[in-house]
Amino acid sequence: MKIAWRYQSLPRVSSSEEPGRGTGGAAPGAPFCEQFDLTSRIPAAAIDNAQIDILDADALARMAADERYGGDTYRCVLDKIAALIDAGYSSLKPAAPDAARGILRIELRSLGSGLWRGSDSQSILRFLHGLRGLLRYSFATCVASFPSHLYEDGSGERMPVVRRVEHLCDAVVELESFEGTHASPADIVARQTRAKAGAAAQDYHGFVHIHKLPRLNSLTASVGRLSLLHTGGGSANNLAFRLRRKKFCIETYHLPIEGGVGERRTPAEGHGCASGRPDPLAF
Amino acid sequence: MATYKSLSAGLNWASGLPPSGTTVVVAGGLEADGGVVLPHFVSSTLDGGGAVVLLSFRHTLSHYVHIMRKMGVALSQRSFTFVNGLVAADLSGLPAATRPHFTLREWPEFFAWLAAQPPSVLLIDGLCALLDLGHPCAAVVGFFAACQRIVEDKRGGQSGLVATLLADDFSEALARALIRRAHYVFSFEGLATGASSDVSGQLTVAPGHLLCQVPDAARGFKPALLHYRVADTTVQFFSPGQSSTVL
Image (cartoon, rainbow over all chains, first blue to last red; front, top):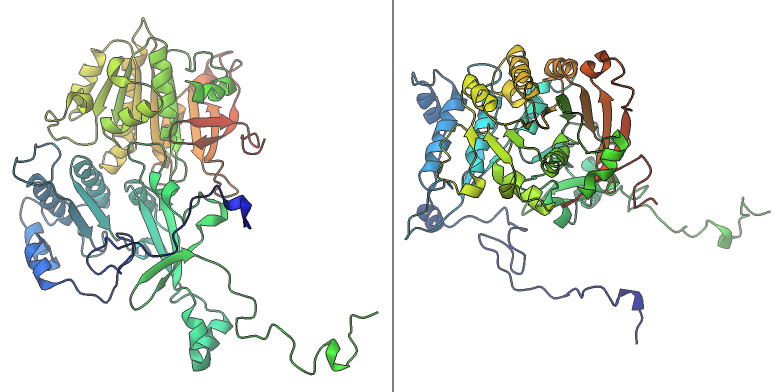
């Protein structure tokens, strides 16, 4: 019996979970790199076997104090990254016959914060330009966090350098937290009333803004075409995030039901036409 | 190239290119990248028998090779020269198909090399990167002017200069200076009404200061406001409200 004949040409969607291929704490059956349990710990053996280079603030300060850098943290880090890439992740050098190619993942925390000292105000721009050049000819990727709130003038407007930083990056994602923003009275009551704690837990914790997507070897961003969330613009890019104990969710933001889910949707006894009271709309 | 025919028609450019010896400044933004018009200049010049020199501060040669290949243009078989402005490293280890023909290190060296090239259209992608590298605005304008003189002095073929930059508060002085030295100005912006899946942005083409100074030169040119949609293999330009999805 064909009930939904209009859907017969669409691909079938399996209702059962496929065997998972994820590692490192991914939930069983989840596609690779889509779900990650924030409470799971990386096994100590995996950490010991991995090649991890950490450049903490103290080590960075000692290296930057060298007369070659003159306290310029950006140049120091850029040279360090260049050395790491040159040690086995450069696409300009052929790989050794018995060596397997790996991916170098670089994380830069709070780029542009007070810990990063440059020779002038454009040191960060030179750093990003140099970093992009290094990454283009390497098997490496870099994720950097940028505290944009430190680059706001007295009126709350962002400084022009922030836009330049965005332009020098391939992808730009902004997390706008609701914390500290003006809360509606309903939210304040929800946080104060334990009875509605369940409803408050459904609330989002902030917005996700996708300002830029990578466009390497193409005029368009292939990631955008494949994404179920970023459907091309318009009102579709209303993304919000929720930080749970075990996961970080990014979903399309929907306005909550007017009045909340706890409000009665049907009239109680004693109200309405059935109670014998005259309907004010009847004529 | 068929994808840019509507752009050529809208600008009244029969060959798809401005007159030889002219300068075009392409200003874009984070929401609308002006680099989408570079394939048009590359293909139109090559189809007309001219030569192209592409100086890029933003991408590698493989990036442009892939884009042009998706549009049906094989750069390896044409008079196409790529100048690497992104890195100063030795790139001789790259395969020939993706190896730059020249690397920009010292400006006088580049000027001498450019002067020795045959008449060609010089495309500079990401000129504002020189500001990011710490060069003062006056120096960047001087670099642009030197390239402009070298290119316009060449005779015997299609020549010109096309420079793209990101126009924002940081590069406002540079953008203003370049517009005063350009014949045509392409301005790519996002839609004022918000993002759309059918329209990637809008393009405003206006005469530059140099074109306005030449008597009767601006009469054959009409400013245009076009919307465009960028796909993986095509870029469609159309009048506002005339996109294929609407019609």
